[in-house]
Image (tube, rainbow, N blue to C red; front, top):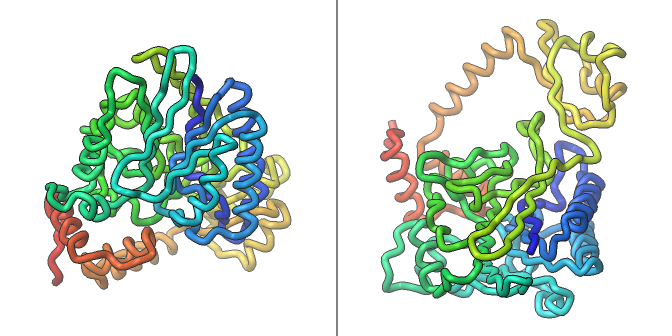
Length: 385
């Protein structure tokens, strides 16, 4: 059976002042076409369906249209919630959707949910693990030693009584790392993912029992630990730091036990996000202007600052998102600002600020202590001056 692995759709997201609804509708339609072309029987959506816990009406309509397109083509969908999603809002109508082959699992109830599909080789078990924190797992297993995220995920898998002789897939939204390397961030993740990721870190070997692990949370498509533990990445570039990167569709074919084939296809956006750099006169010359409707991030190297550069650039590139300068004066100013900002904040203040950006709530004392321990092991000083 063939699966299309997706994640981190972040429907409803903007890029600077620009609403990406049209771009997202375009890429979701492209993903349906890719699923059909490759004969996919199901789509796996590994969390962060929406960009905000309370999505806009237009975002909900867009996702509804995507699910309808899949259902009309007879393609099943298996969906979990991510840390950006509201569990209850994602779960709305899930009982009714099952009749159309749309399976949503967003409410964590102490165990992994399981759905099954069948092909010519027999049954494939699809295990669904929405974004979950270690504290939530401890609530269901108070007598077990669950000090961190890694042990929490291992406990859930252990309690699921998975039959290793059968074909098993897991869909999860966590910060998963290999033994020797952290995953490569796409750049559009929440600002605290890298920092909080030190605490959230789950070893890729947690998923050794599964034939394929469909991961979400990191926006760059990549394998982690082994080829069959993968992040699909986000389908669009959601931050300026992703200019120049490539977005991919991940297609997974699972045949008999032990036979898994993976391929990727490039995704072509309605409007690309590009970073251009140079003197303004050079960048705006007729011979250098290409694809003018793309989203543009321009870095000007002119030593003199122009008056209203955004207004000038938007005459040539109407979707210019940002303009900044890189010259001798800006480098001097940036160095002074960074030094002052770091010196003004304690470790606890910095972590708490990042945590609020990711989860929208305050960090607990227990989680803060884990962060301090991780920082200490990494050689980072956590003591206030």
